[in-house]
Picture 1 (cartoon, rainbow, N blue to C red):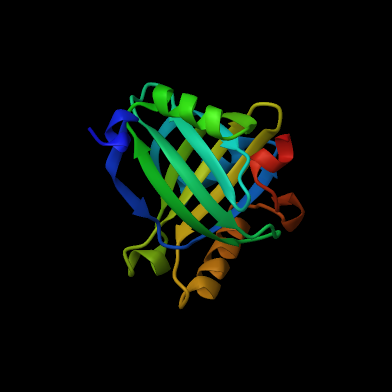
Picture 2: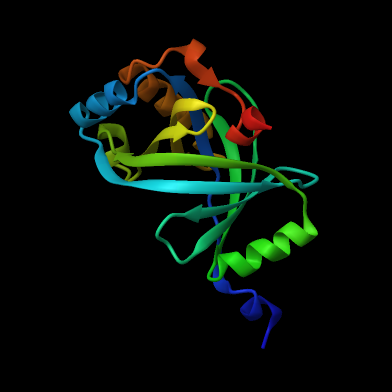
Length: 192
């Protein structure tokens, strides 16, 4: 039996295309939710997530466990720490036996922090995006110890990154999110 099989690592991993993302702190997620509904955003579900972050030399590494799921995701990403839409490179690996894998990670790497949140996910496809079969994922997050946040996430490429940043700026305006609400850091950076 291969080591990966013993640890419960599913063979199918994937590199995400590059992403553009932004995060904003908000006082009331219900206001944002109503605006999303009026824009025709599609509700995808609500999930309780625990992200265990590990110390790594570069980027960020987390094991994401979702309540009610038998699988977890090991996520490594490198992202700009800027205010506004950030460019991000992400690698995701599905883990079938997360408890066993988490024990191994904790033996190999020091845990940096645990981020607990309830996340509502919406999918928005405006007229510009619909013609290209693209969408923006919108996360409405209630993060333990930090408060409420809105995140936008959109696949991009080297050729479209500047245009895609502008799409996120425009959506931010439509939802009434002000530039001073933008957060440049990750949840783990805010907690640890």
